[in-house]
Length: 532
Image (tube, rainbow, N blue to C red; front, side):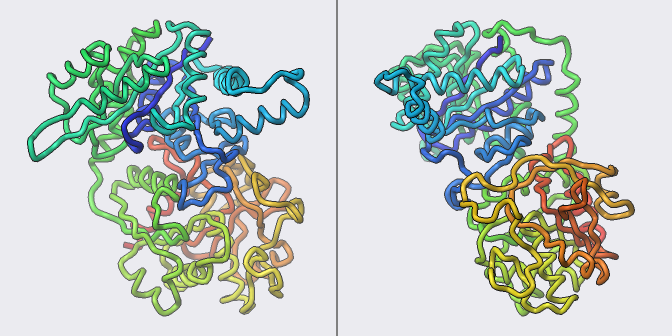
């Protein structure tokens, strides 16, 4: 049976619950334990798939096609495990399931209530994730903060679950803020005390407190937190800001957090830490980078950088390999025209164009792509970015001035990007091509050089595809179809001969890891470095 670690947060949001959970997962994996992660989100959306990126940041897609919270990206990058549709649960999904069961008579006429029906649904989901993963330890993060009304069913569910599986098989970690007042040079433990009091009021006693502070917390303050929050002194863990997210596991390990967790859960501690040594070496390479590459990220949602979190992290991962820092120039696609492009991109070594939906900013993206192709500036288009590359090529090289996607112009004469046949007449909301699909790679292409493989698997999130009616024309004019579905029916990747100008329909950013960078991101930065 799996052990469970529940991670809650208090005082304010944004304290790093997700990074704490992910970092602990890495430490436990370094001890030879199989780890899985899960996020419980209190919002009423069934999943984040239809939420605005400005509201919630990126939607992270799993291999099995679940649209999930962006924190799952952190989990996968740290623990290096592919998560599933059982790794993310929202209040909306809980109530959706409960109400469907009620309509189908599964409750045999019972009065449906928060307790036990809603809480049972949550518990079943938590247990199911542990079961399907076969993990030794399941780390479960509860979204929101203590005191939020919408989080209460989740807190009640994990309280009940702790009783049912036994406290020896369950551990509670509470992440909260310790403010530092620079004017008086004081650390304030009271917010943490109040947060723990709120948590205990719902029947949950924290076993470990992770105290978030901009500076290292003095010993006397840690002792005070220990005394007033009723935890051992070694169970008060200081979480300060690190130069890199990937240093956090090492910081927690230095405070013996993984020792404490293993002790309290009765887990075998492990004899050595070769994997942790590898992680330490990776962190050293991060700090050893010299010089800088400026990459323009041209998108629709650049006002919220978390909208492109996995792409940013993937560029960072590649930078560890290339040995140069990456500076991202955030470019709103609405600002780009054929006239403004030279000034915008004059100091950039490459352009990356990520996914997105809707017609806003499309012409700016096409101008960005055209500038990259005509100036042989390395270009990397992802999902929409690939479709833009096809549209730009059709307009500029084939001479189809009205070429477009039917997503943006339903009546265009040359729809070089068209709706997938199985999506015609389908409404939005979890209806796209989602999850991992194979891609056959053409020999002798930039794509093959990057992956060093004939067949790859990457994750997708889209409705529109390359229109095969234009395939022959495109190829004859110099656009290489470098990746297709195994049966050759779907175009998965295109590139322009003689330069690094590539677009892929899939999302390689979802599978990049800090210790195993996405191949295309590495190839892109190498090309950018050569251009520099």
